[in-house]
Image (cartoon, rainbow, N blue to C red; front, top):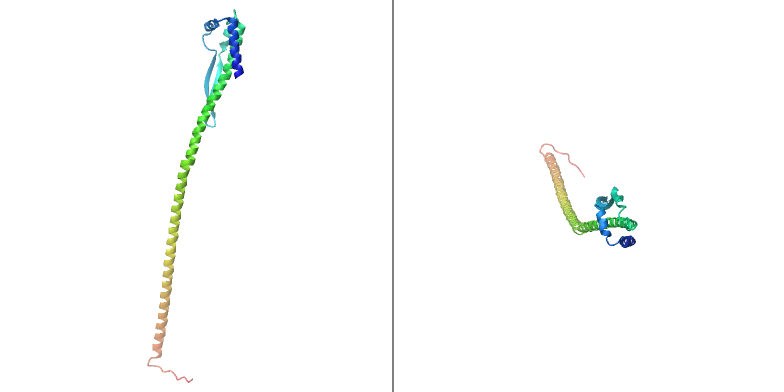
Length: 196
């Protein structure tokens, strides 16, 4: 870059020396519009739109070949060629610089988003998850305690029913024994005497 700019400046100095001080007026009279144009287009790199500068030259670029033919025309054309090379490099440099600045802004924005995710959103989600886990554990303990209570209640009911059945069977047995004993002691039949 530095060498190209140095060469183009030295070529301008040579052209001024050969053609004289009025080279500026001669060139301005012969040139009506720019022969090189810079246009902007965008490139998409990983979802980021980067500006890209391109230069284009007109087909009428050679119409000024005879500029300064009387005094230093060859040096003027050499100066023009040197400045065209300088413009090519400057356009490329401008394209790279704007791409770097755009990427730098995108990286900063992405870093801010990542920091926000890590320092704000993630802790909130972790707190919410721990709260939900705590509530689910509490509900599980309540269900377990309720099941234990129900099992205890069922066990007591079964024990009561077993005790009732025992009592009923004892009462039935006692009634059967008392009924049979009353039949045995009834006045009607006499048993034989048993000798021991």
